[in-house]
Length: 102
Image (tube, rainbow, N blue to C red; front, top):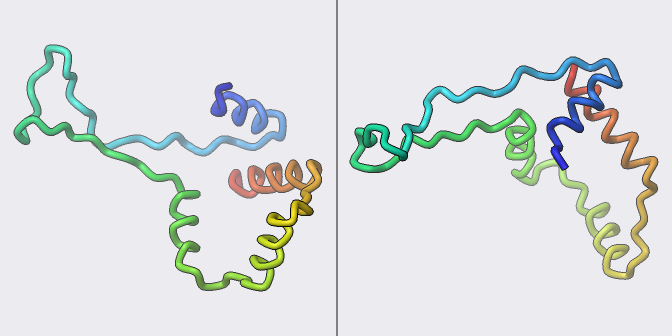
């Protein structure tokens, strides 16, 4: 399943403009007959992180964690009683996408 086209379809259905696609500053030279890289054989690969990845890395520091809630969820998972209604998941996905488009 192509997640990109599925998200684009959902955005158009909800009337949310997609964010501009990320671009890379450098391209990797071709390994099929192209000139060799200038840095002794190593390519010039580059990764671009999304804003979601930046948010995750910022919150990974641990401040603001509700440890009592974490313990409750862990206990429910271990006992097999943890349940999330599908409608709640769908609502959060739509809310997140609408907020990202603002």
